[in-house]
Length: 224
Image (tube, rainbow, N blue to C red; front, side, top):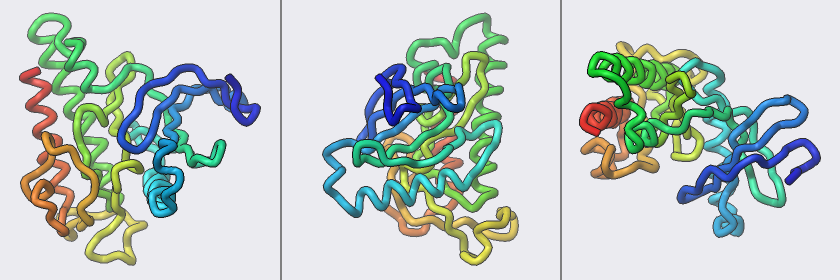
């Protein structure tokens, strides 16, 4: 199926609380992208659409990093806003745990793979924090993996990522965490992975909430 004469729909990838996800082929760019389209039930909610668009713009502003899933642009198709992001072909870290792909090989192979992915995962989060952003929904299903094990943190724009610091005028500059603490409003989260302060709906979350969720994710990688 063709959309707007430049996208070919390749595959339906799934659905979350806010959006459905599709793999498409960008015919002008000759490459695959992942497209997240706001669900029909939300299209009559002006505030939901505005929030969706604003959050996607925050994700776009992160730019490129080897361990971040890049968000390319946002476009309306059929009246619904769609976010176009990098397509990563290996599934999520959650998939690798569930299918036990993460645990293939001998003990040394498995340990090396887990530590490698954990470090890449941390690199991606550190980059986001250095840009003044707190993810707030860090978990294995928000880490995408290529077939050869390159990890990319994803879904910044869809879970109320904030670009707030205690010096708002400087959010375009790299944040030195030794000098300033990144402060964010409480946004979306997954209870199984969220920090105690986030689960308590604190209004003063910092980058530390992501570190807690990262640690829970790493524990799950080791325990299955």
